[in-house]
Amino acid sequence: ASALICNALNEIDLKDCADKYSTTTTTSSNNSRKSGEEKKGGESTRHPFVGLVDHVSVMPILTSQHPITSNDHDDDDDDDNNSSDNLTKQCKAAAANAARVIGSRMSATNLVNVHYYGMACPENTPLATVRREQTSFFESGGAMMGVSSTKERNGTTSTTAVQQKKVAWKGDTTIGSPVEFVENFNIRLTSNVDFDRAKTLTQFLRGRNMEKRGYGVAGVEALTLPYARDTSEGGNVYEVACNLTTPKEGSADEIRLQLAKWIDRQRQELSGNRDGGGVTEDDGDAGKFNYEYFVEDAYTVGTTEEQCMRVLSGKRMEAEDIRSGTVFWEDYDK
Image 1 (spheres, rainbow, N blue to C red):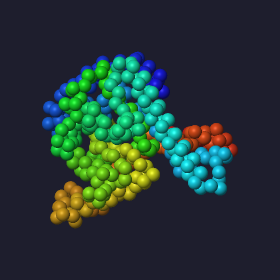
Image 2 (image 1 turned 30 degrees about the vertical axis):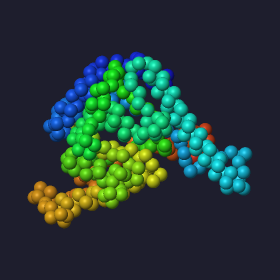
Image 3 (image 1 turned 90 degrees about the vertical axis):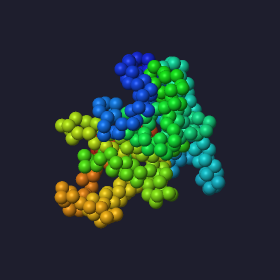
Image 4 (image 1 turned 45 degrees about the vertical axis):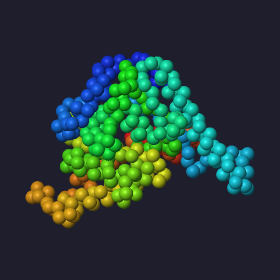
């Protein structure tokens, strides 16, 4: 993995992107004064990133079905639990060590600044904190649209800290190992949903709001981003990108349930049944404000732990799929 990444760092010319990256880090304070609706061009509509290799994640696979060997004592629950705990510790340690090895080899190229997070750093600092405090991630691309609220919440931004660091030619890289396998889920909204309304969904899904506000999904980190595309494909809209840091508790199904509750709230507000709100002539009746009115698509992004487990047992699964007449990879092509 480190060889592939380092070869890419050496071979890919990032001059144009590096210029844009440099501009972002030095002018983000000025740019942040403009709202997302006012900014034009690619800078405000691209996905936020801080370098050519923005993020490397080495994730442990810790399912409830630990591969206990035949040498374990099946008749002794304590031994089974100890074996399972030891395996978990070994898996986490291996993931953290792999992340540090890859990071050290990337650092040796002198092309990127490497920032460790999770189990790969001594403080086990979460990815979001590292991005906020050590990089310009939340002040780049579409994430700049929410920088004002970040300033209000934290009192400062990462700009000063970033400017004090040496800007590497090909940017920064965050690399680490989360405590659990992190899954991703995106909700692409329709053109009926403006930026302010999209932000309410982001708040509605964030796990940190569960205790104080009474809504959210456990372990979910969410960010409101622009989704840029040609007018022929529907034009620019917004999406809510979610990290599921504890997917066994806060799963994709839980996000869908919370999304349904959010839609119900929007329907009530737009229909004039909540907080004295009104409805315009163009809005029509409440039946118009269904799922399709607000949401284009809601879908899992990238790889899940279940998919990894199936791949790791690929030989056995392949034989079963051949016998059953199904093709293994077609299930996960999307």
